[in-house]
Image (tube, rainbow, N blue to C red; front, side):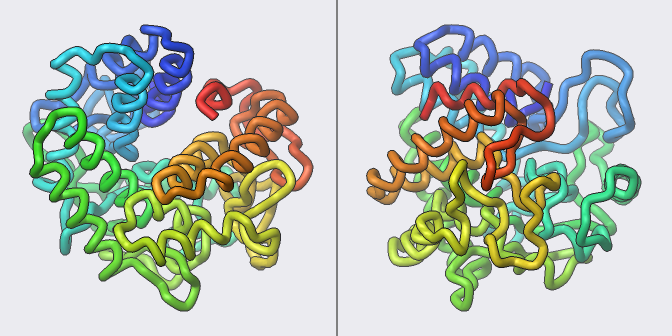
Length: 344
């Protein structure tokens, strides 16, 4: 069971006002550690090594559970009080254990959800996706992680520590939603503080997008213009910067494509529309783009993206990801987060 996948599944269920969306969220949080950490995988059986625990991964993923909970509330489904408590503890984990200069850091590419983004090339030493090299590099970064003795969660790494723009944007938005759900004003304050830190440390004025910040290892690849940097408008607090990001979703030379959003600009030398995390469109990123547009009042763009995304999902045969130029399905088909079409 994957953390952010299941959160998106929950959003799809609750778009139909179906209580299975709440069941899914309850399962997402079921293996939460006592320190608030939520693992990015819950195992069904024996699996590869992802940390010292035999039952779950010791890494996490973007905190989309807050978005899933606000989505359920807005679609008329009651949220159990224990879920709100678990969400609050999960978000507080980042400010207590994973903060540097007011921003959250990750200790493995898995934690961003964008497993083989070009932004990791300075660490992984490749500009092309090779499955075996990818697996070997990911395992090396698991071995480089530092795990807490009490719970087993990864909280540092000797090779990979990065402050990702989209992860922090989702976290900033999550704290804002948590404030609405719980009434805790300190969550709203934390949301804006993260947004301020994003503007101070992650904004790249030359590209008009947010970039990532390497802490341990890494290098110039953190500046590569991926869709992450545009969708970081989700957590921005400066309207002019958010709109500068979102305008690139209208630009055919940047991220706009016939059947969705490219992960890399059309003219970028690394753009490969059929290659894993090197250019294809992804349902969950399409959905987050629509939410970013709604946040900043770009309802016309949100509607255009919704229609194009749904066409891409259907044309791809409900694929895990697809070629944004042709709509040809890639990866697993069907894959359940394509059901986000219901939320578009």
